[in-house]
Length: 98
Image (cartoon, rainbow, N blue to C red; front, side, top):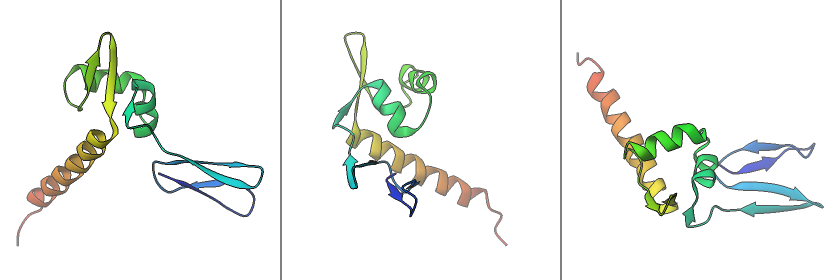
C-alpha cells in the first residue's frame, strides 16, 4: 500500500509501496524483487513469527538459501491474489441459494 500525505504532512495508507517525505519531496521505495524474511513480513504487514510459520509449513512461496529464507516479490503478489480469489469463491459457495 502506498501512502499519501495530507495537508499536515502525515500520510495515508493506500498500497504496499513505502512513501516518505524528505524536504518537501515524496520518495517512493518499492520492495526489491527478491526479499528477505524481514522485508517480506514488512511488505505483508505480518509478524516475523507468522511468516516463519507460513514458510516452514510450505503455505507461502519461498525458498531457503542456506539458513535464510528468500521470497520473490512476484510470487508473493501472485500468492496474495490467488488467496484472495479462493476466499471470494469460498464465500460465494457458502452463501445459501434461494
